[in-house]
Length: 180
Picture 1 (cartoon, rainbow, N blue to C red):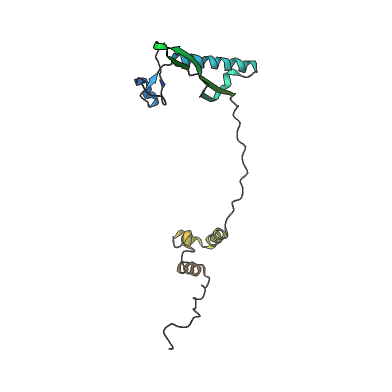
Picture 2: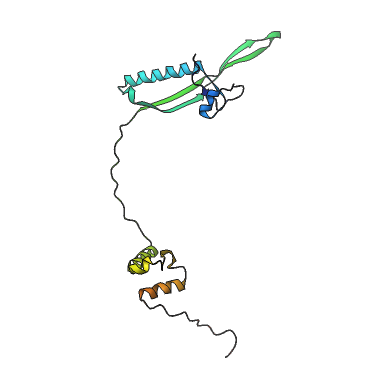
């Protein structure tokens, strides 16, 4: 067993020794699990032979999914001193692995650009902006975001366009002070 590159232990880290090889994975604990690695390599060889049997290109296979889950424990007994019996369990697992052939890359077709939908307010701003003479637009006298901010600003825009502003609002209620 050549300890060239360790396997980082992320989940079950109790009593796991530390090694500087785990720094590659931004961890401190790692091991070199020989038995588990042999089993996984055997699964990969089995998957490769299955792919050959199904007439797939084994050079283009990629692992798309791999999952290890707990299996049912095997129950045995071990006999102890003074007539006692303890459980002697093993903890097997299920390894699920899916391999797929890489699909050849295909160029994406050009999508049709849909016409953007504008609100009435946005359309009005665009019409007003198009109606402005170039000199007033470039001088920074009017900014497009200030058309509806206040009545005074809109009045200034209308005057700049040569449109007479609306008449000032007249209050139809009686004066509050009394008869004058």
